[in-house]
Length: 173
Image (tube, rainbow, N blue to C red; front, side, top):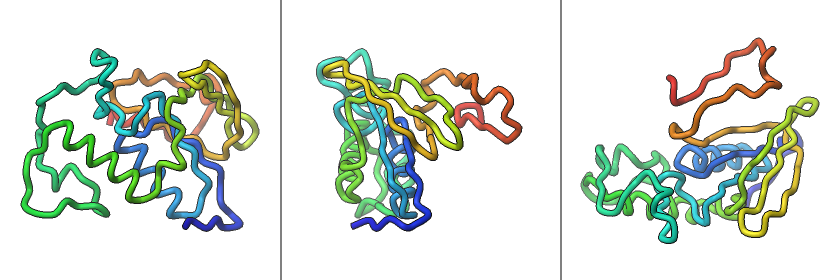
């Protein structure tokens, strides 16, 4: 069970693909309150194949990873046995099992799409929409992490135009 320290932060993570899942785990391990938002009905990001919307996914049935499972998996959850090249669906299953094994699912709001994030004081007001019923809610977070993947267009939020620090988009690194 995660215990929260006095200095813990409220962290919002957008996207629960591989990077989002590991971000959830890392922030929980450090004692923070974490909520992850993803519009899909299951974890996995681009690796999740929606059986009701096959046009949505970046992966296809029967495709294979380009590196072996030992290199593709996380250091804290290595698969047993020799290295093999997994099918996309095998990697998707690995991500689902990872989320369950480390208790991440209770911190993930599936079928919730972030529709707005607004800088508010030292944190962020994050508005999400339940993709099933259309209802919206807004919560305040101290930290906002965008783990939406390389298939999303990177746009600089207006609120950060005058920001003097470093901002990196992983797709351009």
